[in-house]
View 1: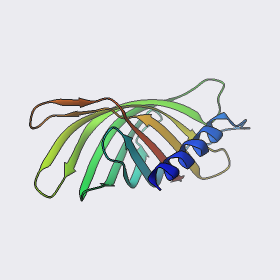
View 2: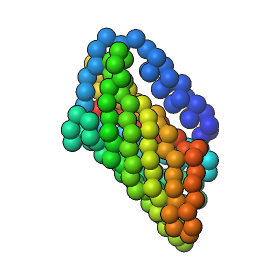
View 3: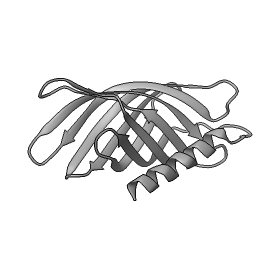
Length: 155
């Protein structure tokens, strides 16, 4: 079921990113859900993105993973438009992430690179990003194959 949901979101994001749009609308805050998938377990949870300037935003997540693990994280992101593609922006970011399990807590550093698409004349925003993770406690571990998909209500 998780693979089906992940595939549906990927297809929806791809269609949204490749559609021909008339004009773009910016947003100040967007609230919705995020899927965090790749090597390891898949998580689903809440996502909020808030802009403090045209290019500066904070993207925060509360993600629930298999095995009673909860992830809490936030990244500062620099975001800019892609010329000739209305509503489509690229972004880079970095920030801390914490995984809380039954018996331990993992501290991570999460760099992020992705695309953000705000549908013009609609309060819908999609984001797809590469979210590798550096786990810093219990020895440093790097996991490259982690990705995020967000579907948010923008206002």
